[in-house]
Length: 321
Image (cartoon, rainbow, N blue to C red; front, side):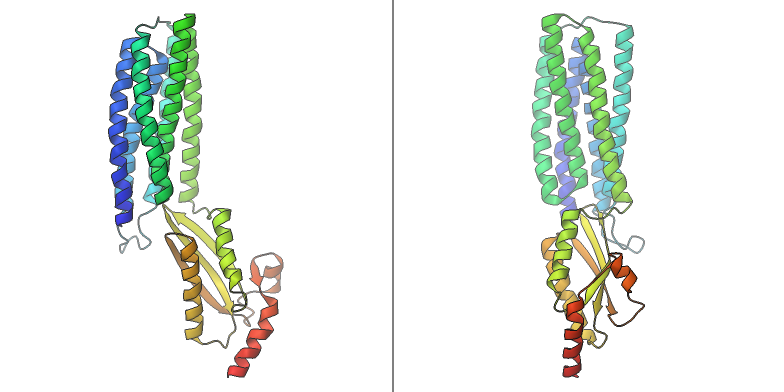
């Protein structure tokens, strides 16, 4: 569980950055009166709330398995990323409301230079933390850290748009550009929030592992073609950074329990060497048993049988006996 605790500790950096940028952008809004800066400040407030929620979720995810949660608590990470996505969409709705209010009640922006400076400093802080968290997310394979990093990157893009908008207002005098910018920012962060919620739902619904990872598993199983007669019912899922893999392995019915066990251990270790944080369950079935698999399943691609090895392995077992 130390692994998950280290991930939780990284979020303290995000929380500190969110608090600092929230203060800078809020001050920038009160100084300039810009809807764009208000939109950016609103997103920073959501960043702070989301980071606190992510810390809470990772604290739960770091708990060891217990009698009520025998597979562990790692799925708590998906609640965090889903909640963060919902909070982002909530912030976008607030931004649309503010932009619409400003459209109906125009206001001249003031002290633009001061606002630009504050937003630029906040953007640099967020950029540094986002890149750090993205690197950590890849290292720890954490959807929670990635969600927080992606959210901060979206905030950086928002700040960049705000800076560009304030500069255009300053040099053109077109105040309506600030309102239009608010709408654009709102639309962009809705897309970010929707993507986070989609990934969270897929995790909670036990979506299979990516095709690249499935390919690694199948590569290992095919490597043992000379020692097994096939496999089927390969199922995978992921909870946080933990992967779960299970499948049925077809072996000659006369093989000893010890030999079957030793072979399964070898296969498990090879899969674990290619996929981190992997829990594997192998169900051994006799190749000769018609209840284990049938030709129809094979034709439908639900079972993969190494036909050329069946006679060879069966012959060897007869000779050994």
